[in-house]
Image (cartoon, rainbow, N blue to C red; front, side, top):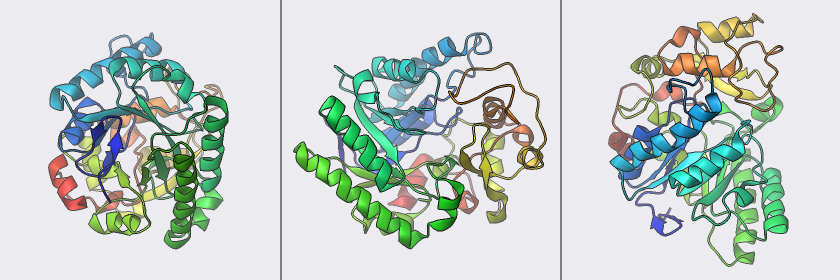
Length: 349
């Protein structure tokens, strides 16, 4: 894989650090990865959870924190490539995108739904845009839509595979169906689709693969498929620079392979997480009381949900791991010690 370009900046290593909310990938982690030559990514999902007014006015708290975390990242890496992961499923999606552009995002990576309006929201800025897709079908839909409506294409495309962590872009039966070999064929189809639009617009559109990238062997396997880089998220949780509480990191270090499971989020999407006391309560069908709504996801009815995803993720990042939702990738169990960002990158490349 060669180093890829985002705007006027070129990576020194073909790596994007995946966005992890709530509060897992903030300014310190993103800045540290950017400093090493990769793309550092800040997640905007409930990014303002530590702000004093978060409970009363989460929208304002989140918008303020979007700018604040970029300042922290830029203090670490003034000239590195730093962007945001912004979920389409967020109620405040458009305001998050505008705040990210204002903060000086080099790129916005957007999934958890198809980012149909993203080109309009960044219009007139230097911020580059990248959809996250999981199938060739979804790649064709979003690229065709942007082509027809905005007369443009993506600046980069992230393919998120079935071994990824957090919310997944597959139905549960699809997760069971895909093997490493069959999904490799899907990746090749997506690359061909992206290349057709890159050719149409006479530009380069780097294709990045995410999901289950843990070591050098994983990187080499996807590189052989013809992709331009990898996106790695879970691997950076157990770093000193990760923005989460040490107890959150230790929960990942202590996780066994059999502890990692496909779970259902309150909004119906399948996800991957560590099976802990909290998730066992959820799986038993227990109704877990929650705080007043913080207005995070569009498709959420506070009166009907079994638990609040915001509460679960905030508990986790603060270190209350028994009462928290511990999202992770399929290979989280492989981490066995706390490392630095630099050490993780050296093990990937």
